[in-house]
Image (cartoon, rainbow, N blue to C red):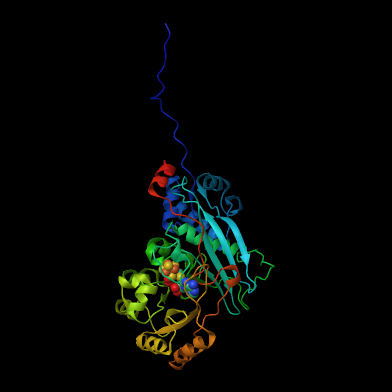
Length: 399
Ligand code: SAH
Ligand code: SF4
């Protein structure tokens, strides 16, 4: 008699869990991960501290290099965690030293989904080096003068992906101990030991629509035992997500910038459509009451100069009047064009006349020099080719 076995109910081997990305976990979370691996609380705390130092102070991506960690623990970490960097798809250097990277990320939670591309920009100046970091791929908002606004939101970046932009930029600029500065025009601020002295959340996306991840990443970037950037050197720019502005001050404590761009609701509704939800009066009230705002910690108001749209002397006078009771800096941004953009930049004498009025009201050097226009790295020129998938496509890929 022949016996056939029905194997359809046999237990399939459980695949080993994918290594967990350590970048973007806060210290408590790293401690918990270590406890899950069986470390007792005291050792977990000690190892978490060591890992933090290797990752954020030394920029190490290989557990094997963690020389003060025992061999057994290094192997345990290597088997269970990863410190992988994103792929650098492109790195461009502008004639003025500005650098732009195109990074490719895979969503760790959904590895079957296609990767996304993100742009990050480094702007060296005499006295500082600023990294312009992205918070989302694309944007849900549709500001009419912004290239990112023409790309639909693909997805929010994770805290790890936001931090990875900083870590890779530090690596490429030779900011970690033992690193080398780039030879090709990588100007580094004089008298500073770091290429990156400042961070601005002014890349792709609206950071306050990805609050939790942005908060986590910025708290890690400003942690005194890690990357250790002062919160006064980190600026978050928002188009005006009013309900999250107070939380930004209370929970993150970084400097705030507001994309104002118009002094009347009718025009701002058109240029920055989120204004229909939270109009100027509400936005300015949130600024007046921003936690920690003072003359020493001013809010920056960004104002893009659009020819014949928002650049009259009357607009300048109204701008000064609107901001009168707020500790403010004004940043006039010459419009940076992109393919098919519906505006022109104001003429230089118009910008000067506008800036004169702002200057006379007591605001110093208000015009922002466009940087990296030749490599499409200037404000508002960022946009990646990543596309949002339809729900059907997502479902097909994520099984
Ligand atoms: N979403 C956030 C942060 C990213 S945009 C925000 O809107 O604030 C960074 C700055 O560049 C914003 O002030 C934005 O309004 C401005 N900007 C957008 N497109 C621009 C363009 N084409 N030229 C000059 N500035 C632009
Ligand atoms: Fe989004 Fe900011 Fe561009 Fe507006 S200006 S579309 S909020 S990235």
